[in-house]
Length: 83
Image 1 (tube, rainbow, N blue to C red):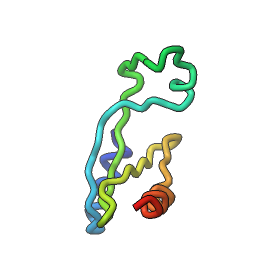
Image 2 (cartoon, helix red, strand yellow):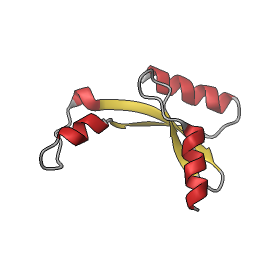
Image 3 (cartoon, rainbow, N blue to C red):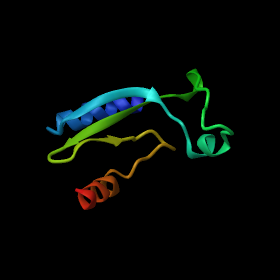
Image 4 (cartoon, rainbow, N blue to C red):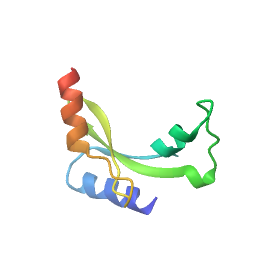
């Protein structure tokens, strides 16, 4: 939570539209190990991240929490290729 809220405040301070998001993180390993495609989530799976708004694209996750990094620039490139 602290990383996400600090990131949102930093983005906003620099005039970048950002929002704080809370939810659950389900890793690729958890998905792969699921026998029936269902996974039980608990409080240990809770996570918070920031999202930044890109014109013409929308909100993209920017996770600055160590170990949960999303490559936002790569995400934007992939999205632009698919538009």
